[in-house]
Length: 168
Image (cartoon, rainbow, N blue to C red; front, side):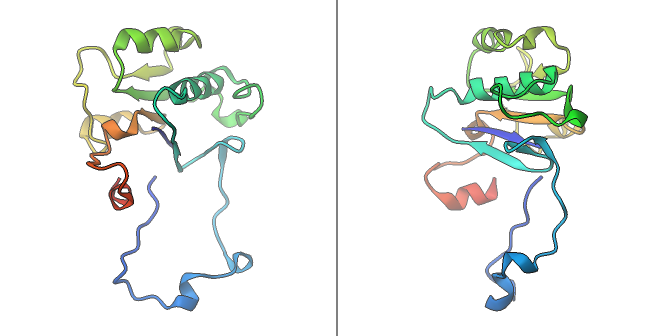
């Protein structure tokens, strides 16, 4: 899985006292903050986006295409518009599950090797990062974070147990 993080949603414990009538309400009664799209219909500011699929199903290529389109100010997949205020946004890309040479080759196909606004975990740096590591927290503000592959950082023992995903 590839995750694109642009804030975590609140998690409510079952023990929290809330009445059923207050837990599920008609959408027309909601008062919520408007959201900002980075890429129309794909990427929302402040959201956590997960692309799930089988191994070798081109999730990384899709994330690289999205990254290149944001940097180059062109539609993602020649279809989804990048909001003008986010064109050229810096991208921090964690790719922990493929050799650096392979990643460089893939990223180069999108011209990302020549764009200083696209940064990835460097060769020789530890291949493991925790999402709450001080180094990563210092590097992320003001950037779009792409985590490829999410299972490498989520510390999930059994990917088929949804309770572990809530912790992530």
